[in-house]
Image 1 (tube, rainbow, N blue to C red):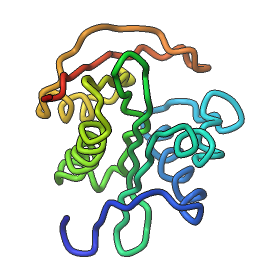
Image 2 (spheres, one colour; image 1 turned 45 degrees about the vertical axis):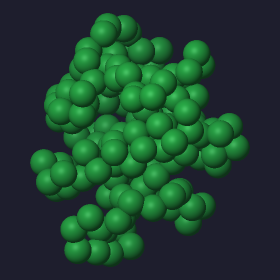
Image 3 (cartoon, rainbow, N blue to C red; image 1 turned 90 degrees about the vertical axis):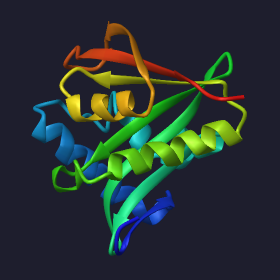
Length: 160
């Protein structure tokens, strides 16, 4: 990581900042951020991710949360990437890739055989990161969020 920027496991003290970062990205892309509804997983990250065997990391710059990524069991030997978000000024600098590599390392060490990601069609920068990391696009769906967002599916087989 560059300078004072580091990827660290989520702690309760990061909770408000995680909501701020993801809310900022949603506003930037004109998406509805709904922490009391569709995005309620973010109001209790410990219960939604950590206590279910998943992981959640934050990217911090001099103590300030500037990005996020999570991994959860998707069943059938697959892990799902969740909540890959970076503030605009941190994109294009290798931080998205670093967050994904953290998640992929954990998935491989945890014995997952495949990693999948569903990403809003508007988030082209994230799609480019997935492709550079060896993911292939496999599908499209309409998310059950309030915006009925179009999402693309990406998948990657992990080395055994």
